[in-house]
Image (cartoon, rainbow, N blue to C red; front, top):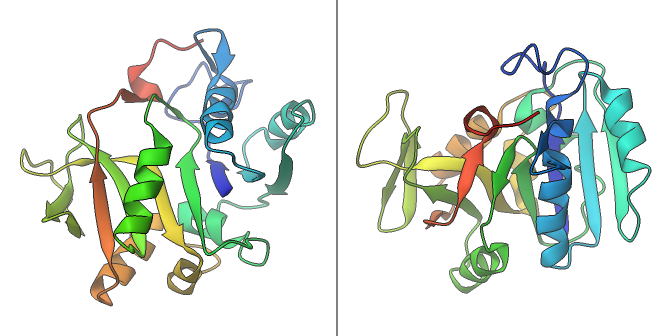
Length: 211
């Protein structure tokens, strides 16, 4: 299994906490958010990790030097490329037919193995892990993701920032873009974009008591 952890950003949402510490290295339950997310990927046997960074990138680079037992490819963005651009940077490194993309500024207890099984059994092109939470704007019908709306809707779901995607998803990305734009392009092209809906614990960094 291969996975991309998105760590590039400006670190603005959690200032002043992020004045000297990049958001992925803020701590929750005595571990950095990045550590929590790496451990979740360890659980499913991830063998190769791809991590990008921008703001205070040297601190993330130094942090991952102390992680053993897994191959890590690090990419330092010289400009913000967006979430889709960050994934696109690793286009020539991914070997498997599908891989995981996850944000680094989240904490969760989602059983990723079940989501992967769902992805495989349903022969999905993209599987978005969703839940009913604070930002319900992903429209789903019969497990098929139809759209991302700007306003929050009770009948919609929140994207957790975790997805399982086909290697061919790179065809919907470019050097500088957002993942959501890539997902929308795939949907418009009638690719099988599904929602894996969970009630397991998940929180965005803004909702956590971090330090």
